[in-house]
Image (cartoon, rainbow, N blue to C red):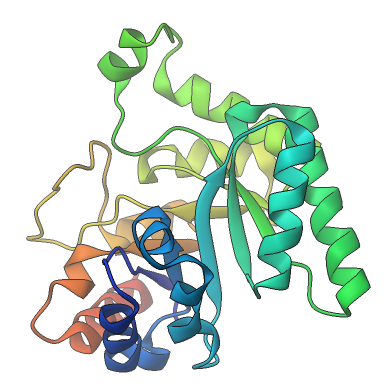
Length: 235
């Protein structure tokens, strides 16, 4: 089974639907984030959900606990398989998210969405963190957020490939690690500061890999996704 989550960072549902059709079951799931969701609202989810694929709703909720709980309940009703919150929102916020997901899914009689906490964005490095007052080394900052997320009842975290091993050691084998910043050999880094290849990330212990432009900008998106699946299998 694929571990690749395709990032639908596009402007329209029509473009998203075209990509979902092109890649099909070569992906484990499809990610809808702020770009598409803000452009088209919940209708942006239809190309994924109506085609029977798993939806990773990546809106990175970060607010007071009550507000985040309400957002998680809404995401559960929209059919999210996985969703994100910012781990920097704190333990109380993350507990509220986990409890809301459990309660709403039980009420609806559906599977509970997985909730993963964003540790440090893959576009940030030590200098960028220092510029906003975080003097702790990146790895230590990520580890602290991951341990807090686990304690608060989340299913896993989103973290760069470079922190996979330390999270796996700190949080155990059943803790999900969703890894963006994946660039197959020969791909441009774009705006990602901390990257690895798919094979390296899986060998380090990643559960799922989020891949955008190397697939969505390819001439043949399905072939690009399959190539990544094959690299992972070889690893």
